[in-house]
Amino acid sequence: MADFDIGGCFLNFVLHETVRALCGVDLTHYFWEGKILWECWAQAAMGLKSSSYQAVQAVLVAKEHIFADRKDHDNAYKWDRVQKKLTGSWSYGPLLPWVSKIHIDGGLIACDLFT
Image 1: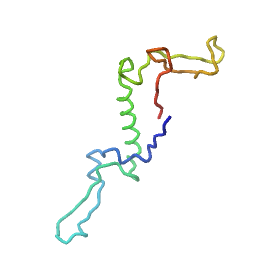
Image 2 (image 1 turned 90 degrees about the vertical axis):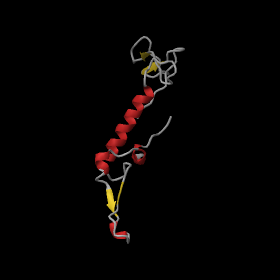
Image 3 (image 1 turned 30 degrees about the horizontal axis):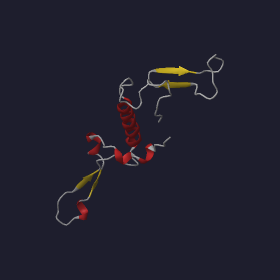
Image 4 (image 1 turned 180 degrees about the vertical axis):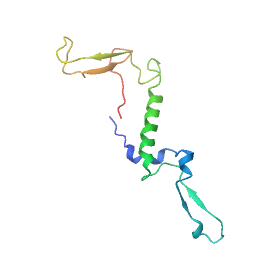
């Protein structure tokens, strides 16, 4: 089991180039050369309204790539079928989850990732 803190991982994602030009600081007054100097953020930052959307979107794209092909034998998240153990059914077992993905090899419950 793991806990992914989406709120604390904004700096892991690069800002889109159209937004990057709007996120910066004018440092011209702090330097003596008389040059115009702007520093821009390249990563999503706390306080930007798009940061949370961008972070969640990037995590979902990463999740899609991680799961990839569910029937690929090298995929850790491979599964063959969905098993339902619902209350009132003949196959109901209180020790098993109601709905689970079953692993291709051995009929065990497959790995999964929830965000």
